[in-house]
Length: 287
Image 1 (cartoon, rainbow, N blue to C red):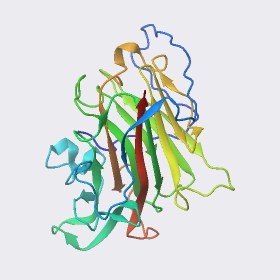
Image 2: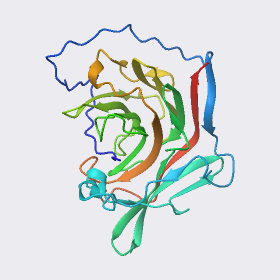
Image 3: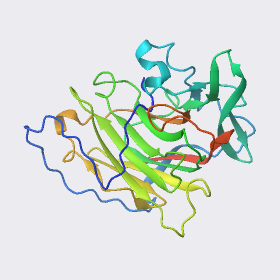
Image 4: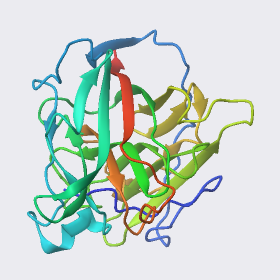
């Protein structure tokens, strides 16, 4: 299990080549429509109840040190300690809230920040489809909320060999930007990170809810925001067929990280508590 230990660079497209001496197979271009025709809704959470549905969500707990020393700070020197407390994650007004808190006194005597990392592993696991998440972000230096996916079975080995899909990465001090990223690589870590900047007249990701989407098929992965493509599609032409691990089951993760190598630690301008609010999660697969 890995965390948000990724280096995000805002660009039109960024590809770190992997074993570039090998020939890359060409595949047909990816074409997706905004219409839901041809899809079935196979899993969803509208957060209409009074509590988080334990049949759909579990928690990753702690700071990673319990798993291994390499994962302390979840591989990124982060400061948060993830809990399953109702203070850090709860349902309010028909929305899921994940709240990052500055603790005083320190939590468990040593942790300055707490938050939540919620997962659908073994409760919602999918191979291909469309996932829509409508959410509003926190704001402030040192905050890193994410909507992302990891493989359920690690069929190709430990991270990054079995891949990672980041539907939405966002850094608190840049409320007008979002990123979509894939991670992969058998011998060397490679990734493709693409970003989108809102127009000046659009409400930023802290001010308003936006819909973050991944469209995922056997040969193609496209990220979207409010129906707008985030960069170009990731295909077997932009990685390599021999290292395209996105043909297995993946599960969804929602979390708010605090501090770390990226995005840096909170400073005097950062106000707590800060929350990511999620209006709904909807998973569709082709009929």
